[in-house]
Amino acid sequence: MSEQITVIGGGLAGCEAAWAAAQAGVPVLLQEMKPSRYTPAHHSPLLAELVCSNSLKASRLESAAGLLKEEMARMGSLCVATARGCAVPAGGALAVDRDLFAKQVTEKIDNHPLITVEEKEVTTLPGSGITVVATGPLTADALAEDIVRHFGDGLSFYDAAAPIVTADSIDPACSFRASRYGREESGDGDYINCPMNKEEYEAFHAELITAELALLHGFDIPPVYEGCMPIEVLARRGTDAIRFGPMKPVGLRDPRTGHRPWAVLQLRAENAAGSLYNLVGCQTNLKFQEQKRVFSMIPALRNAEFMRYGVMHRNTFLNSPQILTPSFRVKELPHLFFAGQITGVEGYMESACSGILAGKNAVRALRGQPPLVLPPQTMAGALTVHVCDTTVKNFQPMGANFGVLPPLDTHIRDKKERYAALSARALEALQTVLLEEETA
Image (cartoon, rainbow, N blue to C red; front, top):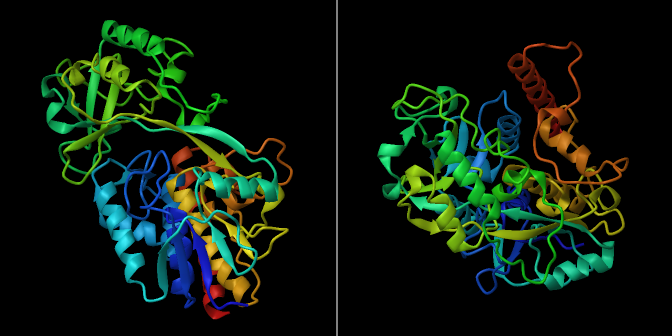
């Protein structure tokens, strides 16, 4: 058997898989089709390009996303270490300068002595050699067709990205800086808040639900995945649907009035310079001119300069419980591993985490060692259980959340204390596994 591991795909999962294998002392060939070919959602020639958002979700250990990132950090994650080094203020979340993040990950991959990056579009699954397939939810057509030939029809859903505006085009007279419930890390507040009164909100809502949609060429629109729903789809569920969702005003007080607004759009820094801001929760499939027209109805954005409009694209994922083992290895083709969103994990860090585990298990397969399967008490282990749960009848993507963890032996009523206890238990279980791995 070849003493090399091949990784197909240079997104977060692929980079983590390549890094994990190389850090274990195994040569890696990382194949990425950019920049000769791009998916509809990708624009940068760099590896580890962030598409939908620059937010990697919460950092606090008593949060599911924060716990997952801490577990990954302890497993030697390339992406978590890089993200922490190029973070931008975002309250309790870990958000990054997207270009800087991708640039630094690319540099680390390029400079690793055991990783060779090859610009190549892979069109068929390899018939031999330990390989990690991390081609993401927008796998190129030829390879996607070959995957279908091997494993049958996968599932699909649509993912949407939010618009980005320039900071200096946001009206400061109609906005204020603050994080919800005062959870800011910098003194001025990490979010720009764009409040609306009842009349302004209802006018905005009325135009949002009737605005013209962009065409999705070649595909009919399937049911939209709840975790990344276009704001216009959510808005059609009722007048107050987004006011109790992404535009909820709770935890915020408008300093101009001293009162809580009727609704609030939050803007989050898109880059370290603070020159670009993302419309939080406003992923959309509206036509570009409609996005400008409708979002400019929000008083603080009446003169907003849009640097990127929201887009919508198809995501696909495997019926993983029928295909993969808990080590992310293909049951019927044991030389293959899959990692990333194509496996049915949802979110940037979740995808990256699956890459770590697939990379580590690819090394173990190469060396004839038993697989690394994390305990379900860990967030990474619980997500693996979800991906491989053969009892699930309608498999759907899953992101990090405390609901996937086994309950504590003793119930703790206070939610914050309960989450802290679940996190402490997870890290203790992970540490036990990592110590065993070191002494093996």
